[in-house]
Image (tube, rainbow, N blue to C red; front, top):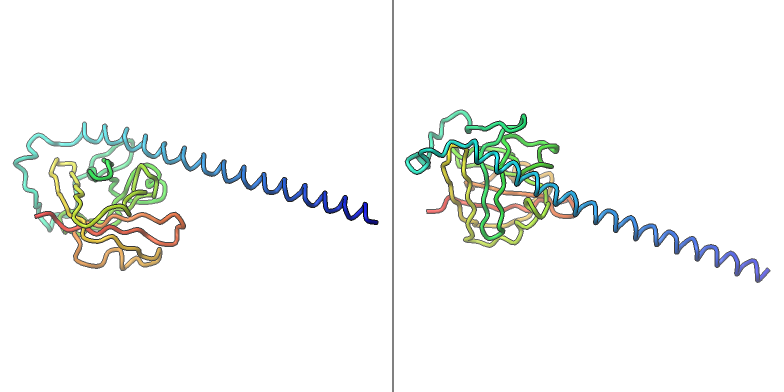
Length: 204
């Protein structure tokens, strides 16, 4: 009887060890996959950015009005591989330079940051991105007073100062577009339940 119980305990112990090893392997595989996906997102953005800058009309950017008509119906767009882009975003303190797509959906977010709402003209532009380290994964590190710039496809550069970094719940859609902020950047936290949100105003 005692030998049978010992054998049973050993069997259970072996099963637990196998399950533990399986969980460790699964966690490692997930980590490797996430790292690969992150890097692929960065490579895709870099490739798109090069093509976007090549197609942008920067012939007279210095002489163009940095405060375009607020009643313009839409931002100018450039098409690359069937997707429309409105310009690119630079965050010097994070060494980021990223193309921005005109519309958002989950497929587009895999490639680049996307306009979630608003326009430059109306000083209410909201840009969303995945929390890949090559996209918006580091924006929680931004501090008040740091610079963020957006260059539209006409070559006009708009610069902003960070004024707040806050956390919103994932279902706070109204909160994301509320307030007198000229530019908002956001991404999900690593748990996926909240949104890291960076608020900016036009630099003087």
